[in-house]
Length: 340
Image: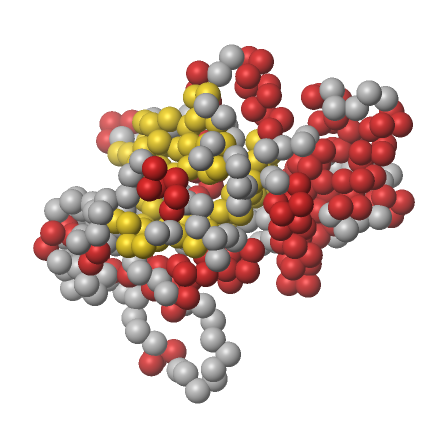
């Protein structure tokens, strides 16, 4: 498999507290995965708030440097790229962030955010060519150029602004789009449109997409495979349909169980509590989920379990599967290429 992006044991720590008693928070803890350039997929990164998803995205974009590990894009270590290589990297890896309004300058018309990447990367030979490319990109994301161009950001809806950001990313002809909660700030009626647009970019244009979300429902609908993160670590990964329909890690099971149900016969007090169990006050040197896990054994408190390969396209970091081989090397690349 030709690798587009390879993340190797990446760790990021942040200092907190006063200078005389400086502690560290591990936001991303030895995360590894690989994305293929031969068969681009939509890979979901899911987990609750504070699990390290956005920090991981910022490192993948080159906006943060990892404290440990490497991020390799098309065979080049991002941290060691030359100026020319980094310029190309900036074009080929494009972000779509959670808040579309923050990406616009309110004093400029929305045309500015579309013409800037074409000028910066020299992607249009003439003004006419630039106009044609912008029109094609807008139409691809379901917007009419005549009703969009020439307006200020506040004159457009949140869904329109977000689709403009998708069009902007598309104009750069990227190999990878990192979409961080791209539909969390738009209403439900527009989520399907934006997510369908991302699927179109992946299926028809061959763009790999890393879809970062806390929403298991949308990840199930659009992703080929998912990584589940907890407290900075990947605890489960595999084909999206398999992971969400039959979760293996206790944390993933908890996430799936928290999906709202339309069954009105169920009462809140009947649901299983997710509060830490009796020994939650113990110091954690092993599995971070141990304080909340009903299956926690003594070994769980001593060492963080590796990802065990439980099937061809499945892996879970839990001692319940320690009879399975540890996921590494070529097997890791195959697991992260699982499809529904």
